[in-house]
Image (tube, rainbow, N blue to C red; front, side):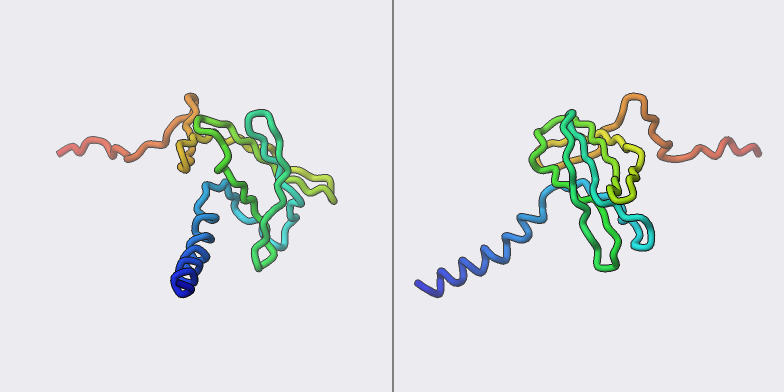
Amino acid sequence: MPILRIVVLTVLLMATPALLIAQPFLVSDPYPAKEVQPTKFVVTIGGKSFDVVPEKNPDGSSFLKYDLSRLPDGIHTVKVKAVNSALKQESPEVSLPLQKTGSKVTRARDEGEKLAPSRTFPGYIRR
C-alpha cells in the first residue's frame, strides 16, 4: 500500500506544474535589458485596473505575463500600459479585443479592422 501512495503522489507532483502552466496568459514581448525597464504594467479589463509586476528573464529583460483564466467567457477589451514609477514614465495604452471561450483565448476582430489579403492577384497575363 505505501508503494501505491508513493506512485500516486509522484504522478500528482509531476502533473501539477503542467496544470498550473496550462492557463491562458496575456504575454508581451520582452523589454531588452539595456533599455528602461517597466516597474509595473497596468492591465485594465472591464473598467477594472490591475497592477502587474513584470516577469524577469535570466538576461535581465522583463515582460508582462497576466493570467486570463479567471476572465468570464465572452468578448473583452484589454488595455495595457507599461509604467516605470522611478522615472515617472509610461507607455501609450494599447487596446486589444479578446474572445474567451472556456480555456481558449483568441484575438477578437474589431468591426472597423480590415483584414490583410490572404493572397495577391498578379493580374491577367496577355498573350
